[in-house]
Length: 126
Length: 349
Image (tube, rainbow over all chains, first blue to last red; front, top):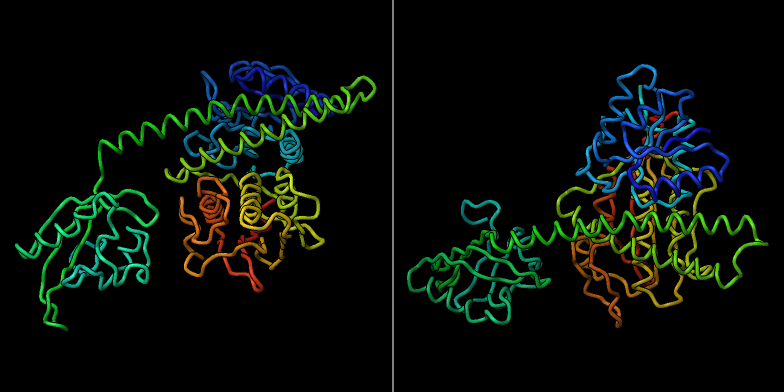
């Protein structure tokens, strides 16, 4: 499975890349939304994207909105990573993402959510 | 209710200043039930260093027939309150003696509110900013542990992997503490959000108990043999299970068994945590879910904590459209249960 991690924390990037690689997946980390959109220009598309909500520049919510606006990216499963897990952080509209995982998370727990999202077992509607 | 202030706390007093009647609003404002204050002096509502204020207030009302005053009072849980009290002296029809009717409106203390808000912001920021690197460290240690397991021949010797486990456990405890501080802030701001996805209640109970590091066999889980799919926030629901079991541990003797029962009720799922601890006083069955409230029955050793666990549980369960309640357990001990709607069929599982 191809997994993309969009997070401005190099630590999260490193840990997740190594963890998913260990599970036999291909995992790429980019530090912001602009780099993510650039990465999405190059096929193949990831099977799941993990997107941090709070990032400098374009927020995670805006990145999801932009992806859903584009027909080629509309169906890429998205798992949001939330630092606050509260309404203080702006979420994209319901139905445009598969799950939200609150930081800090247990790796095993994240794995389950990522696999579920890739299999389409999610709150993604329409 | 007396008077036009529907949200005001109201009560009446006899000529000696003893409380004669106590409204629901007064209960909510001061935290005392009627049976705890009826017949007691007005001074019960004051902090120890303001006891004389009660007498002065009634004296002024008696002299002028009516008085309005800003009073500094104390809730039953010790929290300070600033109230605007209006007191009317009147002749009681039933005894022809003097009586008082008091109506209190809570007043904001602007300076204090400002300080509280600044402190809240600081605590929230600190908790959040500390949690992010903590998550990275925890993740890195977990990964390190996994990698060591991959290559046992080159891996660290036994004591080193033990140290790794200790470091992870301690980090999880720090994270729980910071999470508690953030949740305290969120419940106060009605900001505790849930993000529902398709999940399985049996799995939530099982994984929720894992970080508690309890003695093997201390918690006995009885659950159906089939999955219990529902729409919920798995991390938040695990937190509820963990809080309820941690609560049972706090209020039980060291080796007393704790039973966790998961029941399939068709369109609902019910989870119960039953202990053989000191139990819950009848009057506390509802109040233990209030913020910062501590039950009357307390173990000899202070169990610590912020009195938030059950309040957070209630907030989470209600956000899922469920309900949570406490019962006294037959044969001694406490029983905390929650029920959640299943809402199956919403997901392509």
